[in-house]
Image 1 (tube, rainbow, N blue to C red):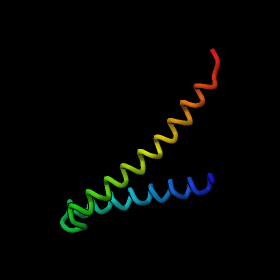
Image 2 (tube, rainbow, N blue to C red):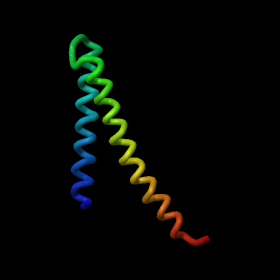
Image 3 (cartoon, one colour):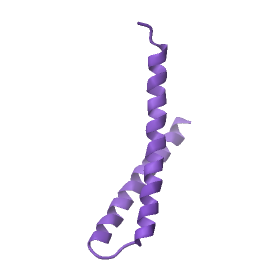
Image 4 (spheres, rainbow, N blue to C red):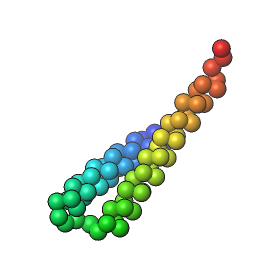
Length: 68
């Protein structure tokens, strides 16, 4: 299971790098359309939000098991 999480994490990183490249191409005159870039950025944001959410739930769960 951990292997799949790492694979999806690196796919997300590669997707974000691709989107950054497309944004630079858009700035310098030609690339995907604005709608495609906006949808891509929204998908990247959603994926990263799910990743951070899973990290935070593990971290908060760790605090719940700690006794003062």
